[in-house]
Length: 251
Ligand code: ADP
Ligand code: MG
Ligand code: MG
Image (tube, rainbow, N blue to C red; front, top):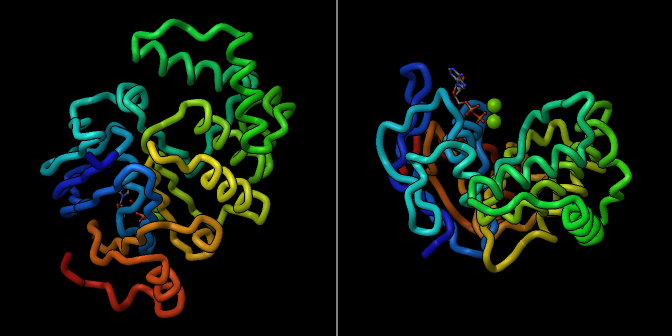
C-alpha cells in the first residue's frame, strides 16, 4: 500500500473549482516534487491534504496508508501522520518555540489517545532531533518565528517535522522566500528525514530547490491537475523551457 494515494480529486473554494482531477501515488520512502505555474492550484492541494476549512472536496478520494482521510479534521489528520509545513510561518509572540513544539507533540498524542509527554522526555527528544538535524536548540527558547531569519524559521519547522515523525510530509515552498541558509536547512532536513516508512511531497515553483533535494518523481501541475510525470530531469527541462509545453495538456 502506498503512503499516499490521491484519486480523481476535485476541490473548490467559494464555488470555484481549483482542483480538477488530481491523481497521485507516493509509495513509502519516495520523495515526489510538484512544480507548476503560480495559480495552478499547488497550495490548494496542500491545504486540501491538511484538511483546511474553506475547501470543499466535490469528488475523488485521498487515502493515507490505504485509509480515507476525507472525513477527518485537521488535527486527526496530523495524528494519522500528515504534516504540512507552512508557506507563511505564523509568529507567536510570548510563546517559546520549545513550548510550541511540546504543545504540537502533545496535541498529536492526545488525538492518538496517548499520555501527555513529560518535560524530561520531551527535552531528550528535542536534543536527539537537534543532533540529527544539526540545529542549535538554544534558538528554541525564543518566541516562535518572532524576529527569526529565514533559516531560523526553517529550523523550527524542520524540528517540528522531526519531532512529529509524520508518515507524509508536505512542504509547500515559495522559494522566493528561501535565502541560501534557509534552502540548506530545508534540503538537509528533508534529506535527513527521508526514511523507508515516510513519503514526502515537495511543492515548488522553482527548480533550484530540487538540486538539493533530489526527488524520485517530478510532476507538472497545470490548471488543477497533474499533466506530466517524470524523473528529476523533468525539473531541468521545466527550468530550461518553462511550462508552456504543458499548458492545456490533458492528464
Ligand atoms: P499555486 O499555489 O499553484 O500558486 P493556489 O492553490 O494558491 O495556486 O491558487 C490556485 C487558484 O485558486 C488561484 O487562481 C487562486 O487565485 C485561487 N484561490 C486561492 N485561494 C483562494 C480563495 N481563498 N478564494 C478564491 N480563490 C482562491
Ligand atoms: Mg501562489
Ligand atoms: Mg502556492
